[in-house]
Length: 429
Image (cartoon, rainbow, N blue to C red; front, side, top):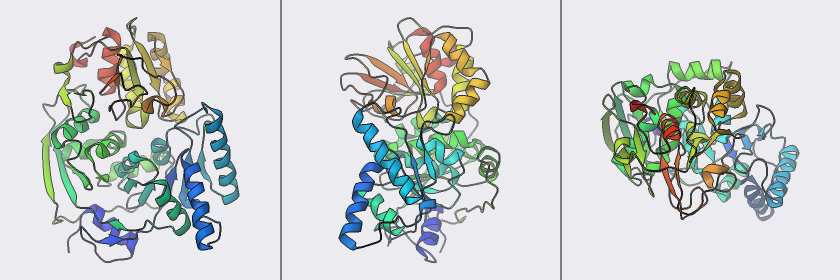
């Protein structure tokens, strides 16, 4: 029977020849990721050990990754104590895939995993973070789970009671116009599908525009697949996947590729052509409230945020720097830049991008998730509006339910930083 990419990955991980939507499985996990919420997982893991009599050892320390990124540096004694608890657990269990702020070794979990070669095509990846879907960019079936589910993974090496999801085939054709980016594609797609349009489905990306994307662009689409409700967002691994893993992530082992069957059965096929796509804006307070930038142009903005697991990579920072080069951030605007990892921070510094941004008036922050969540750095005041390259804009997302959040690409954010209002980057700033 022909199979989609997700069905092939789940069949392999479950020791079955084939699976179909609705089948309940217990797939083996290739990589299990947590961040500071690993403290909750440790508590649940301890309960499982106590209740079952299992050895108090994780199933395979080489397949567990823990990254501090949501509250770094620690913003409170509670966070600091939880981080210490995790450090002690990491040492006791022999977990080697551990990253925190330390030169260019740390960063946001969804950047750290790919740039260190931890994610491979065909793998099953789970994480205690909803944006674990990001890693589908490398051809891995990746999704978010809760702390209790993760504790069971730590103990058993499998995800329990996983229902095989149907797959939506997304065919992206055409060539992106200048200053229109993968972020605009995924915002447009979410607007088309709605925030619940892919609930409990896998989105599998195809088409000439998808194949032309770098891994950086693919990470954007896979990252925000969850904003349409998707369990995972998968790209078919190809020569670009191999190039990235070899050149950027330093992988030396064999990289087997996997592809869906040509006659695979999809629940639905969605086709879009991006040749005439305009920059997009997701307006408050839902991620599917998407409009072309021109329909939101002129809205006053108080804070600009460039970065996050969605758009904090080197090409994102470069795009913003090139627009801001020789110009200044408007006096009425605060601009914050969060590179996705310490490695990207260093690369952007060496290439002069951070100097350009700082010279324009931006504040360059350490890599982290705090501003995106609204729990650490960059909170908004009542009535303020933020324009951000992050991934969510529901009420309170950036720390204040009485503020507004607009989502956009780095190009739109940079152009708008100069004018102080939402601006189409194609028309200059």
